[in-house]
Amino acid sequence: MMESKVKIVRINEKLPISFPQNGAAGKTGSWRLYRPIVDNNKCTKCFLCELYCPGNVIETRKDGIQIELDYCKGCGICAKVCPQKAIEMVPETVEVKIA
Image 1 (cartoon, rainbow, N blue to C red):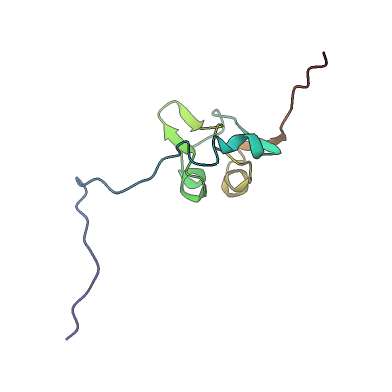
Image 2: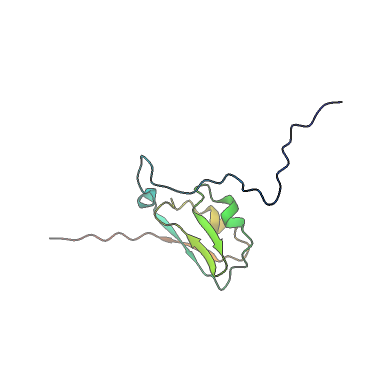
């Protein structure tokens, strides 16, 4: 009989999770063309946006969704997977100062 190589994790153990941080590329949110806007009144806290975010920049809290915009690249996956359509992608605006 073969032994299983699946590791059982107890609920009280912490899972290794990475969080966005300033890396060699700096704050990568300045690269995006679209920004996610959350309507927390529509949000049911299903965690799908947090689960599918490739940058791990979404955190679901009691008061709603928090997106770390300094590191969000604006891919829009969160808006696509949201069943309540609580996240909308809007064009990023850039301020240009003319001297």
